[in-house]
Image (cartoon, rainbow, N blue to C red; front, side, top):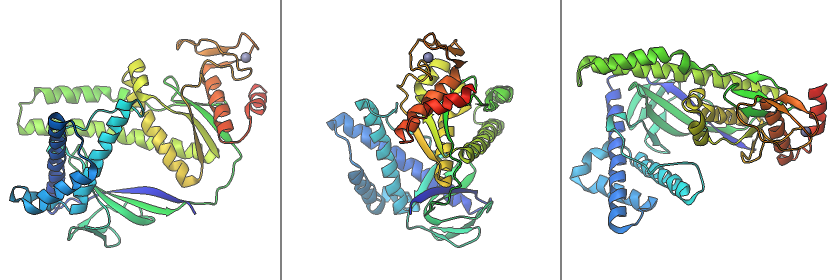
Length: 383
Ligand SMILES: [Zn+2]
């Protein structure tokens, strides 16, 4: 039986007790910055990297023994260990990027303590009391139980968003559903800018560009913020309104992505997608890429696929999916402005994005051992 991990996120009720959690988050931020400073100083002086276990031991020693760091005890020991793990993960990604593996990643940096966003408790320090109640380090908090918690809870994360609101996230494991009503369909997709997604049948899926639509609101809120005096209450309020406008866009976009992901996983047993190079795309196309939230969408599709038993096949982005003819395999240069694929070798003609989606599907299907799907597909498409 395969197990799947899922996350359930709930909004914490507003309560005076929440101040304690806010302080815990501040402490997490302080510890983070301590690690960053220590790591950088060590590197400057000796050229060494402090490994995760050494860091954890060091933090535990300060936390237990030094009166100067007594306030760190507010945060549970496991949460502190998990912070060191995060810090190490950040550095490992940075090292991987420097080695030329992995995607672009800077070294972990300082964070504003008041904005430090989360800490995680593993086995200890929390107790789910059923319903909408959870005890964290001995204090009971209530949250808005918008849906039941499913599966066995493995970790509990307290999150603070840009609006300063608190959320509680349960990471759970459960058995993967092995009953899948097979549709017998495989889909190939091209991620693009003109149409958010194009499938191999030429159907286009458009992502609502919320940011562009609400750019005016954002610009106005930004102007209002700039006019307020530094350190004033009105400035704090203006900043909150701006954060709220950004959060609204992010929520709408995420909602649309979940819906689309469910639609696709319902229609196809196998979904073939190109691996993305978001950084490269950003350089080429600018803000629109972040607005569309492609990386986020790909992540959501993967989560939904895991839940529904859909297979996701990632196709290497170095394959010339847009340059190759889906019917005969001839390769020709395709500048970005060229919206239509016309093959000089065999006379194949279809939209650029559909041609790419067909190639992604063919590459994905052969990688997944589904055999050569090209011929029957093309027959179906041209019919
Ligand atoms: Zn051709």
